[in-house]
Length: 204
Image (tube, rainbow, N blue to C red; front, top):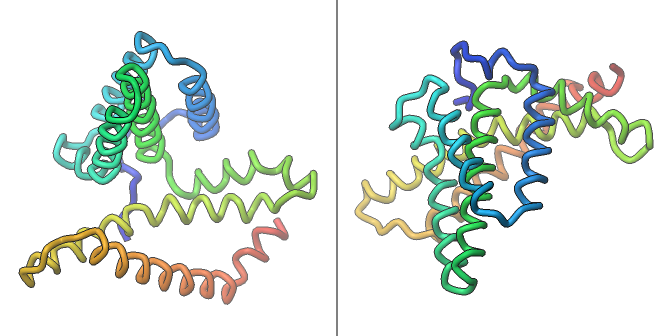
């Protein structure tokens, strides 16, 4: 399975995962509290610069985010059609900043560190009896871990369509992708329960 983590050494790699996650959460809130293009544009540019300085080639960096960037572009075009120009630009800049900062965090933080920090940050919920912190950490870790796998599977299905001379349509690609993803989710859940991983986490 492919991972979003980049094996290199940058200042962002050395930064505490907790600091990165808290900063990302605060940034997300701050971006939605302002409608100022003069503030959102530098934030988006800063996110782009940080992401492209993580040691990836430009082609690989763009390949990792291609589906997300295409989605942002589609959302921006629809927003431009149905909303004022200013609102469309604000939405585009917000999403762009969030995507690149989030991609930078996931590229410089291991899954184990993610699970550990999310579990620690969710511990107040467990003390309040609202949820198990270990389950939250495990769930978020699995989601992050499977993002590159889902993207790889999408590319494989798309290439299989093209090899057979079939038109690549959302319905013909998404349906098998969803079925395969759900099947893998069931297999992983069964494997987790069989190994007692969740019981072990809860006991700790």
